[in-house]
Amino acid sequence: MRKIFFHYLKPFYPRMAGGFMIKFAGTLMDLFLPWALAYMIDTVIPANGRQEILWWGIFMLGCSVLAALFNVLANRMASRVAGDAIYEIREDLFAKVMYLPEPLVDKMTRPSLLSRLTTDTYNVHQMLGRIQRLGVRAPILLVGGIAMTLMLDAALAGVLLATLPLLAAVVVMVSKRSIPLYGHLQESLDEFVRLVRENIAGVRVIKALSRESYERQRFGQINWEVVEREKKAAMTAAITNPAMNILLNLGLVAVILVGAVRVNAGVSEVGKILAFMTYFTIILNALLSISRMFVMVSKAAASADRIAAVLEAEDERGWKVAGGKVDGIISKGADEEEQKLSEKESVRERKLSDEESPHIRFDHVSFSYNKVEDNLTDISFSVKHGETLGIIGSTGSGKSTIANLLMRFYDVDKGIVEIDGQDIRTMDLHQLRCRFGAAFQNDVLFAASIYDNIDMGRGLSMEDVDKAVSHAKAKDFVENKGGMGEMLEIRGANFSGGQKQRLLIARALAACPEILILDDSSSALDYRTDAALRRELREYFSTTTCIIIAQRIRSVMEADRILVLEEGKMVGYGTHQELMADCLIYQEIEHSQMGKEEVK
Picture (tube, rainbow, N blue to C red):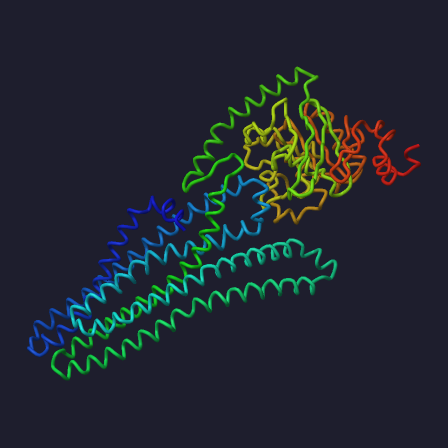
C-alpha cells in the first residue's frame, strides 16, 4: 500500500491537494446549513424579521448550490487522478511481468499474474477514487459536525462523543480480521481464473471426451470456495454498519432525552436541538461512509500487497522497478537495440571466420525446476556455426529444457552454457535473445493479422515476411486465406494445426536469426511438408545454427549431430549412423517409427 501512495500518487499530489481544497470548501457549505437553520428558528423568526429571513434563505440556497458544484468538481478531479494513477500502475505492472524470471512466474503462477493485472488493479482503482471522495469529505463532516455540535450545545455534544471510542474500536477490530480474509479470497480467485482459462481454452477437448459433467463439478468446487471465502470476508466486514448503527442510535436516544430535559429547563432551544439532530445525521452518515471505506481499503490493501510483490521483485536483468521507472527501462532497451544488433553481427562475422570455435557449448550442465530432482544431469555437447543439432527423446526427457536454458529463461544449477565462448549469464539478455529465432512447442498466435503475428513489432519489411512465409512452406495457404492482412482468431482458431505451426516457423525465420530453435514445431506437418521445410533450411539458412527438437526421427536424422536424452540424461550423441551403431535407445526409436524393412 505504501508503494502506491509514495511512488505512484506522488506526481498527482498537487492535483490531489487542489481537489482536497475544493472538497473542503464544499463540505463546509454543507456544515453551514444546519447552523443557519438553527439561527433562523431561534433568533430570526422570533424577531419577525422578514427581510432577514429572505437573506438567510438566499444564504442557505447559495450554500446548497456551492456545495453541489464543489463536490461535483472535486469528484471529477478524484476520478481523473485515480484513472491516471492506475494507468501508470498497470503499465509498470505489465512491463514488469514481461521481464519476470521464469522461476518466479512459475512460483506466482500465470493465473495469479493475470488476476493482479485485472482484479487487483481494479480494487486499487476503486480505493483511490473512493478515498479521495469519501476519504476527504467524511472526516471533514465528522470533525466539522462534532465541532458545530460543541458550539451549539457542549453538553449534548458530550453525549455524542462518548460513543466515538466504541465506534473506533469496532472499525479497528473488523479491519484487522477482514484484511487477511480478503487476501485469502484473492488466492481463491487466482485458482478460479486458472480453471476458467483452462476450460475455455480446452472446451473442444472437454466436449470430445464428454467430460462436461466432470468439469462442471470441478468448477462448482472452486466456485463454492470463492463464494464461501467472499461470504466470510463480506460478513466480517458487514458487522461494521449494524454495530455502528446500534451505537449511534443509542447515542441519538440519549441526545433526545438530554435535549428534552435541557429545553424543558430553559437552558437550550428548539432550533439548536433540530440543528443538533441534523448534525447527528451528518455524523452518522460520515461514520458509515468511513466504515464502508475501511472495507474497501481492506480489500485494496490485500490487492496492493500482491501488486507490490510483483513490482518489487527482481527481474531478469536484476532491476527492481520503482513506480514510474519502467518506461525509461523499455525506452533504453529500444534506444540501444540498433547498437546491440550491430555488435551481434560483428561477433557473428568474427566467429564465422573461425570454423573450429564452437558456437554453442553445454559444459557439464545440470538443472532442476523444483531444486529437488534433476531435470537435466551432466549434459555436455557443442555445436559449430552453421551446424544443425537434433534433440530427440521420450516425453519428459528434458528436450525443451535445453532450449529454455540456452535462451536463459532459467539459469543452470551446475555447469556452463556458452555462446561464442561467452557464458550466457554474463551477456545482456536483450542482446542474447536477439540472436535467436524460436518456435516453441506451445507457442501462441495472437488475434491479429498474419503479418502482425510474424512481424511481432520488430519492424520487418513485407519482403522479409514474404520470404519467411515462403521458406516455412506457408505461402499457398496464406494466399488462399486472403494474404498477409487476414485476421487470426484467438490462438489461431481459424487455422489448422499444421498451418499454425508453419506460421510460427515463419515468425522464427523472419529476422534471419543467428540461432534457430524449432521445439517440436513440425509435429502437425505431414512428412512431405516436413521434408520440404528441412530442405529450405539447408539451402537458405546454411549459416544459421539450428537446434531441432522433435519426436519424429525423420526430423533429426539428417542433422550434423543428434543428442539423445532419456530421463534428463545424455544417452547418445553423434550422427544418425553412429547412433544406429551404438545407441540402443535411438535404435528402438528408429525401429518403432520407420520399421525394420525401411532400415534395410
